[in-house]
Length: 440
Image 1 (tube, rainbow, N blue to C red):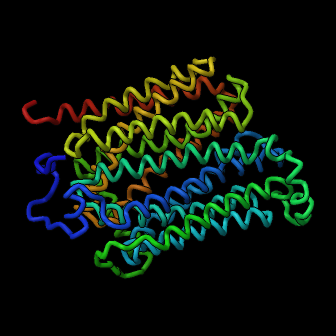
Image 2 (tube, rainbow, N blue to C red):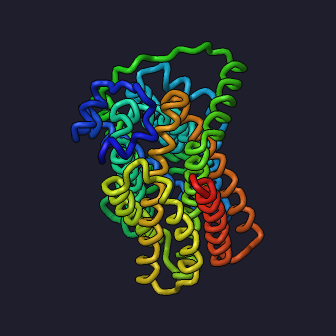
Image 3 (cartoon, rainbow, N blue to C red):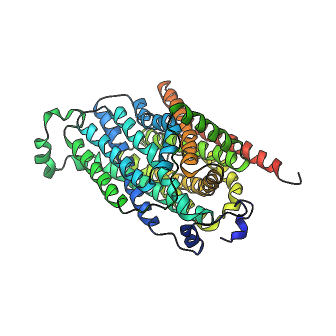
């Protein structure tokens, strides 16, 4: 990527930190790939845990609309804790904060093993994830600098979505009757105490496997170095923190590039969270697939996002991020096509295409948002603002999805409605950006 492409985006006189200079020469800085590996394992466990938790809900005989509440339980933490976690990420060494928050997620799995309700356990997972995200993305921003930020985000999105893909497959395997019915596991099943509650029996072993992945993430995280950037230690009065967060939120929304990219990522992640559940339900109802095979089909979206994110990281410079808005219109328009499909092979191809278009759109715009947040605010605060808005969107879209399921609207209609709404919203944003171009 030529530095001239970034001239409108990098403030004059901005000095490069040593890690940024190294990144500019074409190499990612020391520790970057360890960070990617640590967050991959943590995200892998998150996604596998979601499928196992859905299995726990089914084991308890709860209706299908409880499943979105798992995501709601974790997402509430992002929204409620947003004024505080950004400051926390700027005040602590970010690599060490990631390590602590991964341990919090492990505590949630142990609580499930002890019989805690899955929705409550995902509230604990959400607490860990809410502080993990600004530490992770803030550390990436500090390490690589704007010249390699799209490329770094390509790595991040490939690893996140790859973890979602593999996590869905592993989660499906962990709840599959074929695995849980293996005779070799019988002695372990019998050794489990009756007091294990909801997780008693084969699913306790599934949860133990997920706990092991969190443990691996923690071990890798211990070897992630910090960036060496100075820490910010603002006053810790709650009212002052909330006011500061509100000002940071307003600052990012009122910035032209920041507000535009924040709108797109907010819509995208709300849709992505809903699609995670909708595809499972749609595959079960329309394609007549069991949960473990539905999770595998869900992974096709992940494969597509990996391909799209990789292409964006390689071919789309930061200065060209705005052009990716049209991909968002295409993404929404494809959803009714997916919903109308009844053939498994066609569905797999279409879902992969949806993921590829989404990855191509979100990686450059996410990098633009992080860059503007880093310039206008600080890494931790800007990521906290981003997390607040994106997860508020997740809450809203999942709440609507759960209500539509409760009202017994067909899943095909739900997916089509969501897709058309997304296409219309991003299309309106693209039109506004076109009208803002100089000379019009």
